[in-house]
Length: 89
Image 1 (cartoon, rainbow, N blue to C red):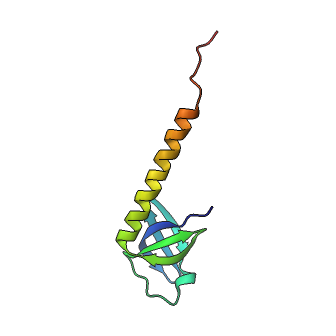
Image 2: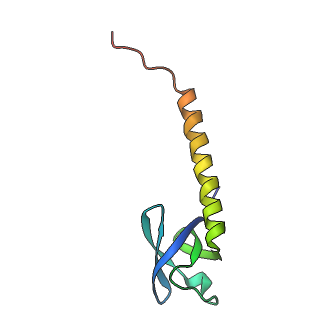
Image 3: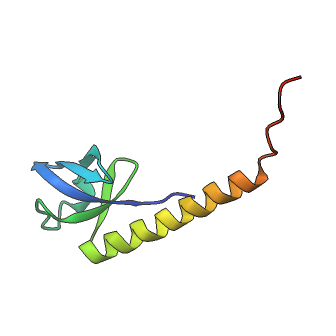
């Protein structure tokens, strides 16, 4: 499964943008959005280093809320499947 990650545009240099999400910054290609008006402060969905669509700040926040819930559930499931650590013999 592939997930697009919502990121905020911090800088734009032609068809490249510096984007940020959750404190992580990445260089992202805007080539696929060349027919759209993108600006610093906009939110884009990023997949494999390419911005594939623009989204609102609300849509980006909603996506991150869902991703955070998925990660919390996965972490909880992983913890409950782990056998208890045994002491050394």
